[in-house]
View (cartoon, rainbow, N blue to C red):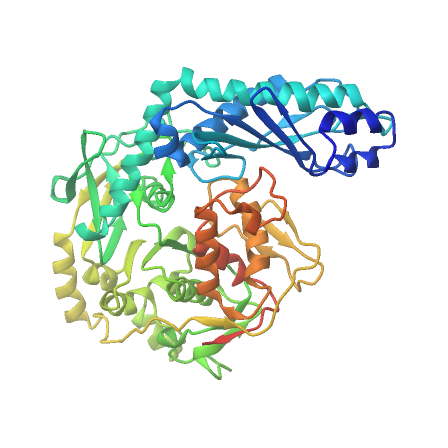
Length: 554
């Protein structure tokens, strides 16, 4: 039987830093709080150690009935409080540091905080924290480590658990926000909707890279013709703009809120915290943002429906390249999304090659050739295949003619301009611009041919590097992730997904299900606090861009 944390610290006090390895797996109960060291850093300047702390909670039914938003709220408390429990000046490097990841503006399942069933009944708050084991001149400071592990961390856990009780009204609002968004998302399909933007929502952010809502921004107000109402399980009713299935065209002058609306819709796949301004923006979970990614890697993607004539293309059903162009990269991304199960594609002309969105028949007369069809060509066929598209586009009569809904953003206020679609249809027919009767069949799922292992992979922001990659992998197009912990989660999931042959989408969905059940140990044998919920679509986004990955059609 392994010694307790206290006994090990007594034994290794004053020894070299490597002796801290004896703490791995050691545990101790302090009062009613259990402490377990699950990962030990090898050096005081290395990333801090990981400590698992479990504290029993009271009998508030919110804890057991809604563990996801309660755990999210607990993490926000822990993040706010953790600096108080660090031991300042405890030594070198990360000595004495106590830290948890900073949560983004959305409510997610995270490895840093969970609400789990207690061993003797009731529920337990489980926190995973980073703790810097203290040393000076790389010699273990046993008494300081004892203060950190057996005094400060238990007190932090107790304060967080008491904070849940003390902030009961705020916690209830947090839970209600999550309940309302989950309720709306569950009912979108039955109402023929792909997204909902609640009246009064604040969509603009304070700055380009900010999470906070813009102070003084124009509150969102739905056009009456597009307004829908939800009676929520919390007892209140809300109204807002429902975006219907099919093709929705978003138009308007520059700087009037088109991209702001699209970014809010894309972010609506996650549940937002109260005060974010977008807590009533709810989108189907399978929505996928498509944009151009010049130079990206493409592996055996079925681009057949989009190809008219591409020089050197042998098999459009299995197209590969190491240097996709703006238009072909967008085509590949859309096909990959549909292959993996998305039935809601989001496109913004500011981020996408023009020739992927529009078709110019007059220019084609000059060049005499055409390689790819555009979204305006395939929009009717995509609709018939059950794939909805929300697209920001201007100056496209064929797209306007195919649209089921037209929304014009005017000074951040939406206006229903769907009546113009009928006029556009007449113009398109008269000018010979009406989309042809092209058919569209969703691509088949692809299978990994052989295992693929990343050698010493590193994420630097949104750039993935590894020794065996031919090129760096740019993940900046993955615009629907809300925090760094989600990016951190993609890497081990992608490694698992590519570790053995199989149908990629099936394996990715299984991994997502493991996350939704809180099985963090299936991602990492000794999970730290830095993992957050992601979708199967997000994992496959990374996998589809790995240079050298060998896949084939199933």
